[in-house]
Image (cartoon, rainbow, N blue to C red; front, top):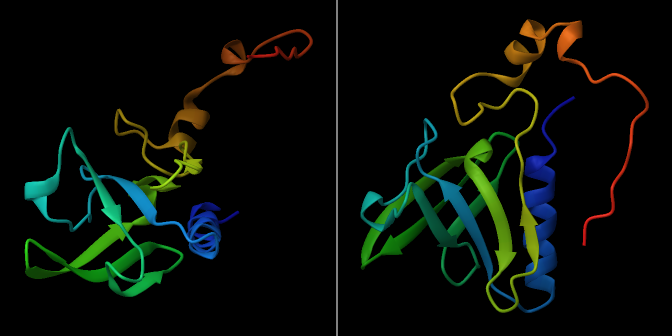
Length: 136
């Protein structure tokens, strides 16, 4: 199946805007292909305001998110592969979603989920009956 992330980013962006809030995204600036203003990257991440008043030509495609914006008065075309979007939330109340890793996306150690799944054997699988635990 294709990644659900582009659909969720589009939906949360629309939901945040419909509720008169400001959508922000958290981006992993270390992912290959990310084009953001490096002077604003802190701890390998950048937080970007993607509201219509802050950006021009926002396109959330199935593979990437892109727009043009001004940073310190300097225009820049921003390109973000969707696997680099770590979260989308409303500035005003923090409501939104944090994304985990998906099959096919790189792990923090640089391996691919599917490759890791092929390498695991039956001895790596849990045995017995599955259990659920309530976390408060």
